[in-house]
Structures are given as C-alpha cells and as structure tokens.
Image 1: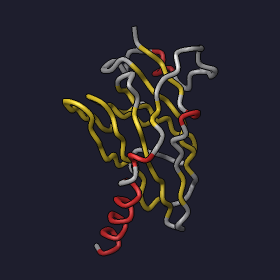
Image 2 (image 1 turned 180 degrees about the vertical axis):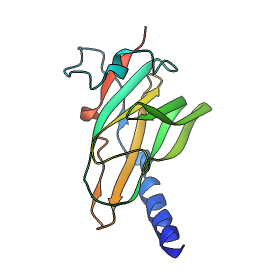
Image 3 (image 1 turned 60 degrees about the vertical axis):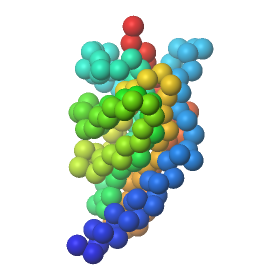
Length: 149
C-alpha cells in the first residue's frame, strides 16, 4: 500500500506540470506526411469530435510501474489507446483530466488518439518502468491530425 501511495504521489507531481507543456494544435497548411496506422483511422469510429490527433508510443518490453498523463483541453476530450476508448471528459470551458493508461498499453507500438476541438490541447505524461527508467513524448511534431467534415 505504501508503495502505491509513493507512486501515486510521484505521478501526481510529474503530471501537475501539464500546463507548462507545448500546446498541440493542427496545422492545416499542408496535408499530413504519414501513412494511416490502422483502418480505424479512416472509419467513423472516432466520430464524437471534429479533430483527431494521433501519435505512436513505443513501450519497452519490461514491467511498468505507472503510465498516465494529464491533459488540458477545451470543452471535451476523448482518449483512445489502440482503438479503444479509455477516457472521456466534458467541460463548459477549459478543463484538465488525469488519464491512467497502464492497463491499456502493451509492449511495442501503441496508437494514442486524442479527439477534441481544433483549439488543440496540452499533454504531459510519463511511463515509469519498475527499473526506474522513464519514457513519454508529447512533442507537437510527433502528432498527426485529421479533421472531420
């Protein structure tokens, strides 16, 4: 129990800095330069919001202690890991949400899709392994966008 509380306190301190991260917004000046990662990207599976933001997470094949992120968004956000809806939040204006992804990710490639407004979002996350190594990237250049008609 104490180990869980220490992990929770650490994760909260890391995630509390989400408002210092870069704001990720679409750039509609040119078409995306990538191949879609799955058929789900081209279907109406993600039809609850007008813009999809997609990136890949590379997860090592070792035990994970904690994995999650804090996201700042405007009005609403839907979070998908590997095509599965794992979280959704709706607010009147701007909002924050803490999302635990530990049980949704697997070793190897993982697709993270954020569906929200075209105003964008800010995200700060961490994957902390049992061996104390850490990983997560929310670099705006790694995100691809798709707008619904």
